Image (tube, rainbow, N blue to C red; front, side):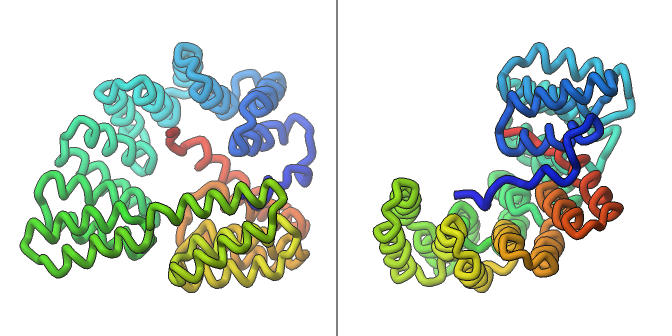
Length: 357
């Protein structure tokens, strides 16, 4: 379930807003529509590197890699100091399974902008794929220093250290991941392996037990089943499943999060807020929950509360473009146009720098 699309109407539909709309449509996975708005902006500014990057992402998703490469090369001709076309050339090479060439592209991007989180992270992943564990650890260390709120960065760093048999460093990285999200079983699994290697069997057993309890295999199946029942209009049965999961796994925030989404979709916004609050009690650093909480407050017309929740999410994850754009939309609703534009531009620049999976 989603909390609904971002509102686009506040910035209009003229040429100057076409690029903004293109990026929001891309985030909503409306690829063709996003590409169309990028083309519209290019009619207004034919050599806009930002609009061309939107088209690069479109062709990357469509797996039309040669076209994407040509566009990247055009952007480099327009601005040879931009790191982003090299970043996307890396994404293309990675998508084609050529990790060695991808790594070279990411290195070129990082020569131009060493603080580019997706570049450092994906360089680490490339080395990870090639089992160059020390190089992977170096790049991923840089990544988490740039953005310490990215739990996947800490997990990947922990795995790299673990594979290189730097168990103490691996434990430190994986514990950092748990501070951000204590409900990812993959983290506990690798943490347990490290404790096993250093001979701490009680810790090993504890980690493996937590890996199983925080993410029981059947629980996700039941969550999915509940969602399907809701979509079929079988609301009572869907809620029964969520209540049963809550009884079985009282500290698992995914249940509260799904119940919140369930109420949100029915227009029961205050009940949704109550459930999101419960999810935050179990996982107070969940940016997703803060975002959904903000959407519920927005639906009630409580814009100050909605803005407060987005700002809280940004405190934990200052590099997530969705949050900046959401804040821009809320500020625009309050007619704070200068501030809205500031956060919109911040979100747009990060959006174009994110990695493609």
